[in-house]
Image 1 (cartoon, one colour):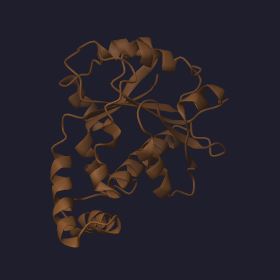
Image 2: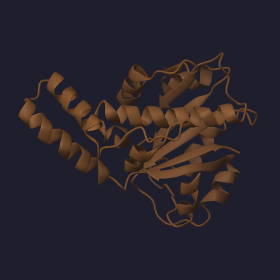
Image 3: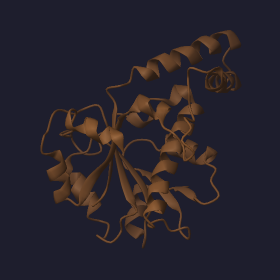
Length: 227
């Protein structure tokens, strides 16, 4: 994917303690339910890659798990997820070890390479149907990251900032979310009103949520896959 080439300019080295959650996954919660729709689109993109490489198993769930922090966002994603071929399931971190076969996405925040390697080692080399999404706002230049990832059996699948989720395209090549059109802003507004906010305030809150989300360029998503 094209964003990988940007990675040569902005490269991650995560140095903070493993699982020290900043709740970065929930930073877009003010955009609900559109924030969850953006993640739904990303999940479908990753599942499609497995299908394209004949790695997708329709007989087992496509699981998503938050290794640190609150998995509320994942639960909300699963609540709106709709795909006839993908059985999306949210699982707890402690359930990973007990699974005979796993396919899906493991979400992590600010985790060091040592801990990431230990997690990746839980899966056999033959199991290629695993993605790791590291969400971080703590990164700096490291020209040897790809080499370091290769040593623990991982490679870079994609790299983007959190606001770039808005511009992802679906299988038909259509941009699913577009905050420059009224449709998605209206969804946020209606959600805020259902939650009890005054309609006048809800219009302003929806617009401010979009502006704030688009400023979150320092939050990066490093999507890793098995080598």
